[in-house]
Length: 275
Image (cartoon, rainbow, N blue to C red):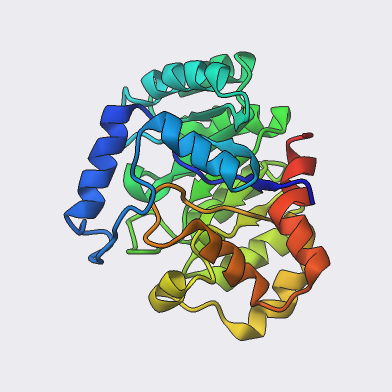
């Protein structure tokens, strides 16, 4: 295996990232947990650490929490991707007037993956304002990593039902369900089994920390095995309260075999992004 492809790492403007860290440091209300940031450091240091870990491609998961923010984040992401060649150029979106236009611009500028954060953004992913944007992304075949599960705390629009409505309209949309859909694991496995372009990322799932929040049901392991070509490595780096390697150990101890691990840690991501 030539290395790792991590579809869920966070890079964003420094002042925004510092705000995120302040939230975790203050034991934010969505988590209510002690959450030390293991890889706190400057941007150049963090990219160097990923490379030392053998990560060959990673993302810059950034997301708005209010209107008028997504387009500005996308402008920053263009520059970050240009100076960080192993970053998969990442963009984001929010339900607001003009969203389809700036999503189109991001696609034209080379975005290879989008991030949608239903919990932080507190929006319905099936909002009609997003409909044209989802259609554009489905047509372009660009994956969207979406935090839509109700962990670590439920939001007004989290859970599988809003995502079902999106997929009913856009069945070819390449949604990558973050955190395996924690805690609604089996509901999101249902969606992956129904829609051939739906994938799930492993971010924080199966780790000791994730298992304390919401244990993955052992009865679902055969389904996880069967979907081995659509499970993608994700880590949440740098915002994790444990060492990066623990995510890899957590996947190995599932006991699904070396071929499954190779596919999840490298092959599936390499194929999805044509690396």
